[in-house]
Image (cartoon, rainbow, N blue to C red):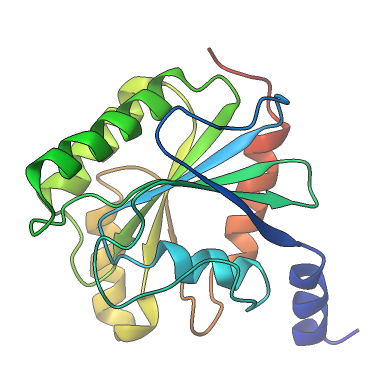
Length: 203
């Protein structure tokens, strides 16, 4: 099987379906299956990346308007784990009450959610090193659970500039440059998720 066909076949085997939206701690899955959190600034491309992982199917709602994800969106997979798409942070136009509520949910989930096996922190390749991304990376590091930096929209940069962005992002943790448009980095991200969900719970 040619390399391109093999890659498409491997990705096709990962099936993702939207399960439900949860307002904070209410309604989250209770069956104990592993969970992987997707975290990032508003409009960083979380939904687009989830759709790419789903083989291009529109399982997650995408929008050019920041602040679209206002709940914890849970996606079921055929690999016996869930994806938890957390509300985006850094959306200054959202009311202070909502921003505070979102950060409370994010903090609680990342610190206290027992089925959580690891987190994917999405960072825009064009803007690495923003203060709220640095703060989130520190928060994840202090939490002690595995995490990785998915450097999104990497297709928008020339190779030389992308290399600079990768080095900058590596100050926050291990990095995988990804593109929801071209599909680069998706196989590596799937491998990381597989390893994280196979690991025992770290309380």
